[in-house]
Image 1 (cartoon, chains in turn yellow, brown):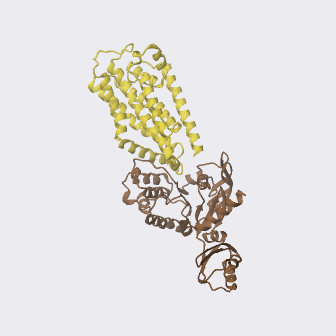
Image 2 (cartoon, one colour):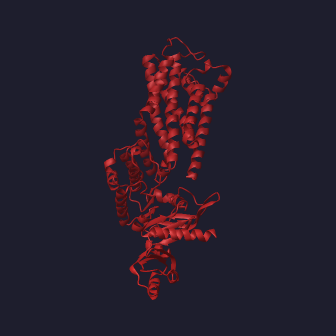
Image 3 (cartoon, helix red, strand yellow):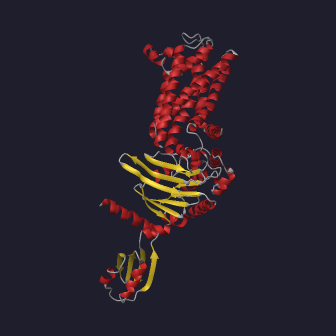
Length: 252
Length: 304
């Protein structure tokens, strides 16, 4: 009980810090909406994305909400963890009652709190500016699915934070972030890619992530392949993060 | 059972990094209420010893017990407060927020305002942690180490980056902690601090304990007291060099400086030479000189 309480103190402080960081808030909460307006802003109400039956605005809304959540959980944490590991803050925390996993838990929880508004803001902008209309259950399911799915990338962020140090962590995070966003089709539908690239893209967790939301918009069950890609990615990233974390702890 | 167990017990603890034996068969027991200074040249194994003590590193062999349990258990029980040398801190949060977190994390916490004022950082409570001077940051680290009612306080180079006034204020605070019956262990390279504050001094060298006792005992172990006096006229070096218990002699002008392992006997023999020493002074070695003497003797012994 005590330890849960202890973790809560750190979660609260992580959150206070995240909300204080304007640059981070802009890029994770507002930037996806801005990008949504740039990409979908000029599209007509009847413009469809090939083979989906969804309008460009509806389709891109999910892409950008997923992108925003990805930004919130991946960008902040990987670099912070690497920096705090090097600076000795992680060591200092190990001299407290905070359980070892409490640090990672606090980081993930605070990222999850920031990722929720980044999803909702895109939805609100899409609904008010581009008249995207869905059933109530779809809005709720979309929010839940995109929010829960962001855990996959939160685990990836933690893994990168424990994998890389110093100057290496930023480029690695950036390459991963942009690579996953672009190739996964968060910025433009993968149907516009050449076939060989589409064949690669459909195995990326970001593609599966957005496909989950688009399935909800189409009122159909998600593809088994997408669920499998997300599940395997989560196991891989979380397992990797746990392994790297343990290695780091032994090294002290 | 835990009440009778020693505060810290190292039993034949060794830790190596590749070829280098950072800690080499260390035996060490700390008892309640002691203020203990850990001294040693760079690379003597001070940091590794503290890491082992706090459970940040695991020994290759031997055992480390705090209050009869493992280090982690003792920390979870709130019995240990520690301040690491370059202990990084969470940035972009205020001093007050960080101290509140430390209080939240302690099973027997003090009130945050209390902790802030005791560490002398109440006036910078709203400052961001990453905007502090070196000395201020050290005080914040100290506040983190004393956020609750711990029985053992471990400080690694606590006064690095502090100016003289702050350093004195810091040790005054530290003494209060010790006076309340806490055990305080600190590593330092300021020997005058160890001399003035610690009631027990440990000298670590190449991962082994070279000396363990009060500052006075360490100085005595280094041997040697200093004898200085002036002689008139031409000084005849021969008889002076033959004085008993003499370890070194330095003559400059009319002044003679001698180090002796038994000052009483040396001075007695000096008068026996029929000379008339003026301005005679007999003084002990400072802890710093004693420390240098002990570690140099060990260097000499192990290198041949």
